[in-house]
Length: 316
Image 1 (tube, helix red, strand yellow):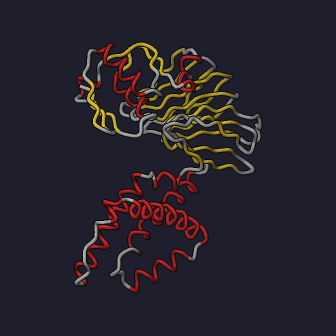
Image 2 (cartoon, rainbow, N blue to C red):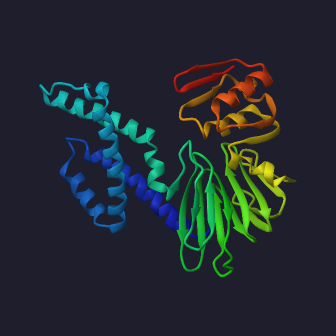
Image 3 (cartoon, one colour):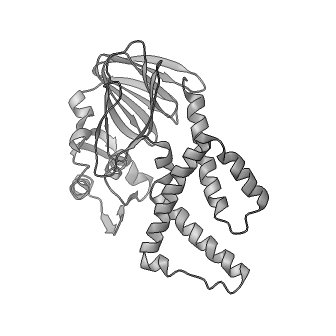
């Protein structure tokens, strides 16, 4: 796929930047390590990536210092061993907060949506993108092509005409090329959905048996990554884009699918107690942006019990 080399190179830089952040925090770091780091940092792209990662880690350290419990977590440096242990403890805390703050994703994404956001972005070519909650994209435009990676979540694209610069969206191993103006891509936990509301798109699947298919207006293609199966079916555009109104319209869908969509709008974690519960079927229109209302719907529709403990919700 076009742009894959650049994407892979940036991903490698991101991983290396995080690795160097952790290694540079080690008080026993060797001189050879320091020299290797300076050599790596001499590349301007590496330097830029490291500065971005350093800024995020700085935010994590600030969070530690502002938390009374973490701030009080100190070991008296009576010996070198205890001094090293103190550094390790704080480094682990910073790393955990770095992950909690979505640090790795922030290093990859050019645009992200929070749990209470569904922003509409205007790209440099005049195209627009609306992100679903908890979604993220990376943008790679140049004179010959317009490429977007859907790193997670869901996005609706309205594409400005520019035939000389193909507009593509990559979601995992699925590549969507616009042949018209408007389509939606959902990069789910187990599948990828492509819904076309205007004209058509070309969907290419990079798998053991590469294939491509044209999806036209009023159709939805679903690629199940585990089985490698793809199905195309008619779809109502208003139903498919209900997420733009904070809703989810489903017909005989597994509860796991509904919970996945609810989780986009919830800052904690929603857990299903077992596969039997996850596979229960749901039909109806659910306001997934309102966690309380969605849980009430599930309780009544499926006669399930919901236990909520702070940021944790268990459905059983």
